[in-house]
Image 1 (cartoon, helix red, strand yellow):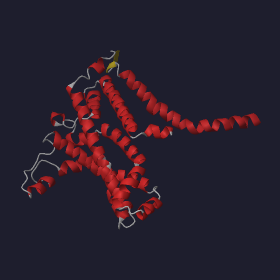
Image 2: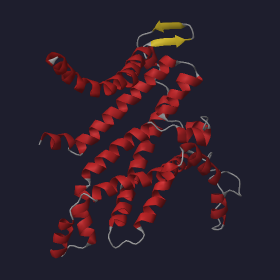
Image 3: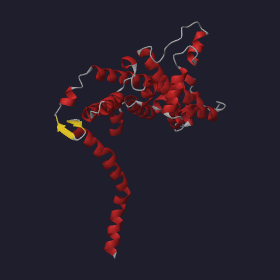
Image 4: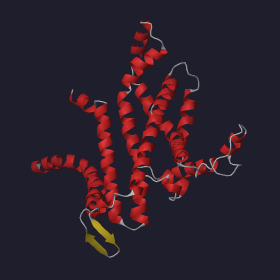
Length: 296
């Protein structure tokens, strides 16, 4: 009886971690290993053939490099917008003298609850080509020629994608930075005030350095989100943007894997995307000194 009870106690930790291990194996390791294998195959219905690195050789394609460029530019711009602006808003909303902080937090957060399909449709209607569309009507008051925003070119396309991302994710990032701000002791600001520091000096010397872990976290998820962006582009252009102005890495995976039915090629593109995200994430963590801080 004693042996039985002891065995049960030893099994308890494994029972607790079992759901995680099972999820890891079936939802992460198995798909990853399958994708690696498929990337070396030519797959058509009823026929699978190993073709070595042929799928990777096909990546020397103009559309693939356009997808990389679009994803890289989109990720860079969204990071440039969705870190400094939410930090400033969060610092403002965190101020004790700010009236209506709760209301403004809710207003900023509501767009993140809207599905990407609805958000993309709204942006598509607002920036529609007809002269009577909302944005074209507004700019006409300033004697600016109405634009065909969705078809005008790369600059307009990237502008719309960044606008859509900013509208949806500013509130989420504000919540992240607010959680970081609320861990900063008030005594630091009080001591700085005694030393004669003004609001800007306290923000630069106290707030920003202590928000560094949150900045690293937001940058990491922004890299992942930027390179995995697909739905927004698909909603705006239905997957057929002119001159591939809305083509992203995941869009290229969708085009090759599902529209062309070449799952092997789609797997190869997906693995390249995985490597790009891993490399960029490690570079930005090295830039911030994340590993040095962990070692210390």
